[in-house]
Length: 124
Image (cartoon, rainbow, N blue to C red; front, top):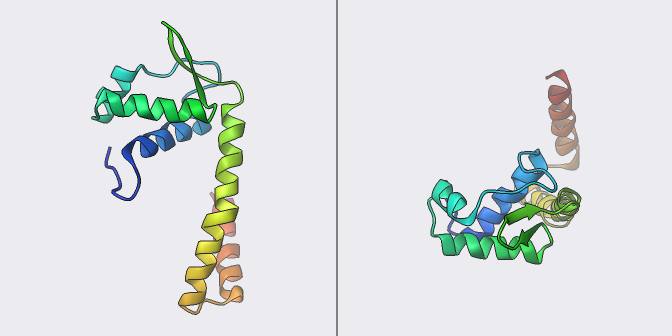
């Protein structure tokens, strides 16, 4: 996995796990890979994974069952989706609109392109 330099590796790994939960690869109540297994797959130090898992625990995404491993919490997917939607509406869309304004893209152009993308997506 290639990492960005603008965000901590442990946070990028947390995002990866969140995406796997959203996609259904990791399901509610199921065990996720162990610290060592995940570290090996991602090519990082196990301490980085411990930090990642700690972050996810603090967000109530996973829980540690002592001696058994880490498990996806029952409401993890809903929690992640709420977080992602808030980020989309509070950060991504405003930044998108700011960038569009900077380069002179009008609301009409945005609407036309959005309608075309939506139409293209519906044809798939």
